Image (cartoon, rainbow, N blue to C red; front, side):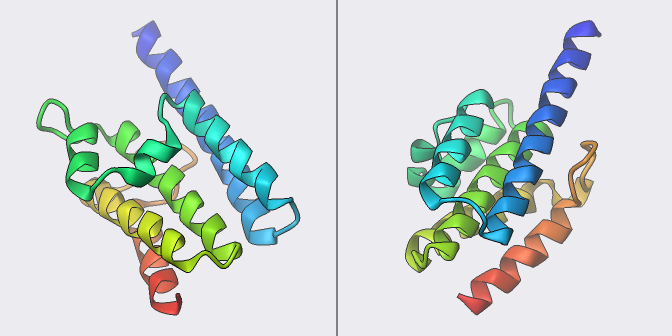
Length: 140
């Protein structure tokens, strides 16, 4: 049980950092290269390589979040949120193709956990994030 509590605390800390980064991306008050570096660093803290996540197919991402056949919600959420923020930043930099690709992958991942909702403290519902991504993709 103590290990599970530790992991949940780490996820909550990463969630808070990702939420703060989202606010900065949307506010466009930070240099783009600084945002990219911070996003890559947060991905590394979560145990992911953002470059690899960008390059994986949807099928591969699905396998990564469900190694036992059942989706691991925290892992799936973190991957989805990282790709979502990557897409937001790409759109902010007017890199529409890159932004669209990351957002589509994020949408797929959020869809995998949407039926269960957001059970992680501090995270918005997966369905809410999926709707936001759909709107962004239509606008792009």
